Image (cartoon, rainbow, N blue to C red; front, side, top):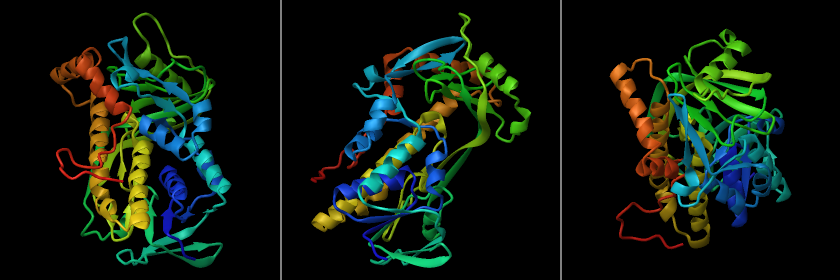
Length: 403
């Protein structure tokens, strides 16, 4: 089988890329190791920043998001039992975010793929990449017990942190950075009423808590815990007791509780592979970088990665230009590192570090006070939270990019 762009992974990055290419008449084949039911049924968080909202509308999959998503103009930071509102729309020039779970976006994207008369090859096994430093790279895989080969002009590695794409880049060439945090998150899904009209980020002596939402009856909340703790140690009663203690306000407000339908603990980490391209292979999304969820950047970085990639591939086919493709890593990494910085900043600002002495804790509370009370602080949080623009050229470059 032959195609123009072979896409490994039917997550947000791969599906958005396929739609962007389809709009330009560029053919692609998507390979996915999981089943359709699996990718559409796995509940994941989803705070979409303005750039991602715009991309989904551009590719024709924004109507259900616009209809059913929870558009937020701000969020709340809480510390010392007091809650302060961050007016994202005001301090970012009118931009918003929308709470729209990732699996719902995937459902929309998969449906759009099939509506365009294209297919997704699910349940593939043993995916390997070959000859990626040539003009005809190949993807080999197994489907229904048969060995298959896909010959491409380009390969888009959108297969996540553990996928084969990044590892196909020679180890002596890959430049990677990995950072672990001394925090874990215990996440729950509960059948309960929304805690507030917008997200609540709470700093407390006992640890961080986040009150989020999914639907009017299904909520997603998080607690800072030891990353090596066992979920068996956390009964439902203990979880609600901690959430209540960490988010109650001085005026007596308490979080609405209800039956917990799902719970688990995961470790916080940041990762960047600066080598996002090698030969005809381009990696995107979690294959190239991961962030702690505090800054709500994971899916959004994936969307902008493939926006850059699709523009570069389009330029190649329409004009014979490799100008963007040659600079793919450079363009993406400017935004990636700024998103990593913001996620690191939010994680450090909001979590209770057990290694802090009383002085460091005092400085942390002073920072929270500053960022939630000064116009400069509010603007910093707002413009990063709603998403920074793609920088197609370095600041100060004389050469302009004409598309």
